[in-house]
Every structure is written in structure tokens, then in C-alpha cells.
Image (tube, rainbow, N blue to C red; front, side, top):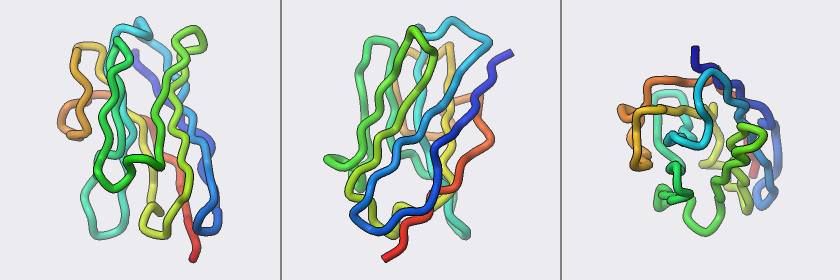
Length: 124
């Protein structure tokens, strides 16, 4: 059974940084696609960044140049480094994965497995 557990959320001031982690288990890590998504009250789940099995990445326009997605295949951990955070980056951040995908996407419909979420709050 695929399990994803996020950690690393918190509260920071605008301009600060956070690093989110997502520990994965239950499938062959490294032959997958995974991504980070965020959700705010009144809005749907928004794709932030995604990574494929060969390290190919894709980002939402709103986070390009500020966020970096990466993966430690040996430790089976997915990361999201978030720099120069803005108040509009606040929300619950989820990691998602799908062992059957081969191309990364920031479309939430592209993933079957989700973590429980971690809160990120950026104050101005």
C-alpha cells in the first residue's frame, strides 16, 4: 500500500523559506511521478511542482524561480524547497504520487495517492 507522509510546514514571514518533506513507502521509489499541491479555503487543489522518474520537473508559473522540487531516491523522500515565500503561498500542502505515471504533471487528477497535508502560513 502506497503511503505518503508530509512534514516541514509552519509559519514564516514573507521573504522567508521552508522545506517540506514527503516520506514515501509501499512502492518502488524512483520509478514514479510525484508532486506537491496546495489548497486554500474556497479554492481547489492547485498544482505547485512535480518531478518524474528521470528527474524531469515542472512548476506552476507562480512559483518558478522560488520553489525547487527534488527527490532523494535512496531515502524515498520527496522535497519542496520554498524560498522568498509570499502570503499567497499560504495553504495546506499535499504531496501526491502515482507509480503508474511516467510524465510529471501539476494536474491533481494525475495522481492516485495523497498524503495528509501540512499547513504553511506566510505572514506579511
